[in-house]
Image 1 (cartoon, rainbow, N blue to C red):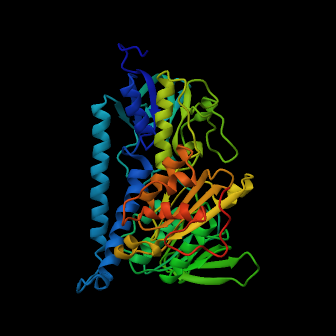
Image 2 (image 1 turned 45 degrees about the vertical axis):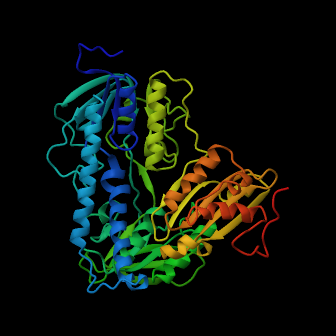
Image 3 (image 1 turned 120 degrees about the vertical axis):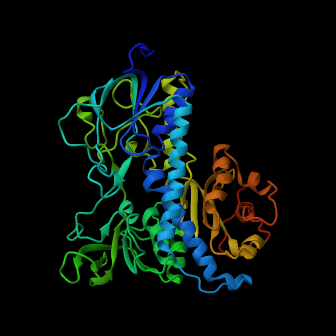
Amino acid sequence: MADEADPRSFDLVIVGGGSGGYVAAIRAAQLGLHTVLVEKERPGGVCLNWGCIPTKAMLRSAEVFESMQRSADYGVLADNVRLDYAAVLQRKDRIVRTLIEGVAALLRRNSVTVISGHARFVDATTVEVVDVGDSPLGPGGPLYNAPPAPGGEPLATVTGRDLIIATGSTPASLAIPGSGLAGVVSSDGAFRLESAPRRAVIIGGSAVGAEFASLFSAFGAEVTVVELLETLVPAEDSDIGAVLARSFRQRGITVLTSSTVTRIESVNGTGKAPLRAVITGRGGEPSTAVDADVVLIAVGRRPNLAGLDLERVGVVTDQRGFISVDEQMRTSVAHVYAVGDVTGHALLAHVASHQGLVAAAVIAGDRTARMDYKAVPAATFTHPEIASVGLTERAARSAGHDVVAARFPFAALGRAQTFGASEGMVKIVADRRYGELLGVHIIGPNASDLIAEGVLALNLEATLTDLADSIHAHPTLAEGTMEASMVALGLPLHMARPATASAPPA
């Protein structure tokens, strides 16, 4: 145990107060560990400050704006509907501030010591904390994702029996000509835009890029999405990417897959907007140029390890630069753990939180706690929403399964029709022999909430029959999962059996 007479000594030192770090701190304290959390910005990390919550707050504003524009479809007449972008940002900031204060309160109530500053490792048991000063810490601030200037006395030096690295990730950049021009932003920098762009080019069609495409388009921008691979959201089932691309095009979003931006230029030569993105297809097609007020680079993330002095500790990283961990979140160094984006495992806030719970349990003495990535849900808050869990159809076939796959459209659900959002489908992937569920993939209204049933089903190793025989309330969107399982069994109720339907499990 920590030396209670020494205020610098703790059972557990956690570096980083994001979704993984603060959750680990709270759980560790609940399990009786004297815990200190070092955070250089604000509690909540990227997800709360610059990621999940801000984007969802703004996407909700976009959703309301679009609904108001279509209110006549519901028999509701509204005149002079217009966007107040400043008010959108203010609402986003209020929500973020409220949640930040909530996390800080939880840390206090659980007796977690919090030190504000930048952490540097002295050795595997010691961390010194350096003052970050009064400079702004958000995107664009000189201290954001960068260590403080060298020199100076540390604010504090703390020791711990165990340490957790939970410093998150930062947006990856592209080494293409013009990427440093004013008006070229990352996902973090997009939040600092004072007005909605009239024209936007988004490099990267994965979750972040697709969400901002939905957001900017809803606010009236002309949007072009450029994706290197063959489909949007390439981590998802290919059918999902195809449906999203079709939906985007119907909304007026230009989708260029199998394409890349080779350079960005300033149209008037001033180094500022308007900008021009030169786009080239992989098939040798002639380059095209698209003008924009904003070019958003959304091509993944890299671990945030700058200035931690990890070389003093000897923690091993993989070829991508992420910290290597085992299923109990241990690194290569005894008593040093890592959770969250720095591990490179499914860069999702809820994964970071669960890793934090596992690490805290292991450190507190639970030898059975382990991470299991079999049933990790993912959600993309585009319009329509996307959510998935388990294997895609392609991955299931590659793994050697004899696959049965089935789709059920939301358009065939009464609730979707009354809701006024009948776009999309539920797709189920299962093993033919026993009907074991392998994956659930949803694109459509409330997909992020509906996927919870699929997560539970995979965790319980449910079968198609289990889903089909579970009574679902009517009329609800959740009936789509039941109906898709019936289609997979060859017994569809509310749609004709597709001519190309796979044979049901024996």
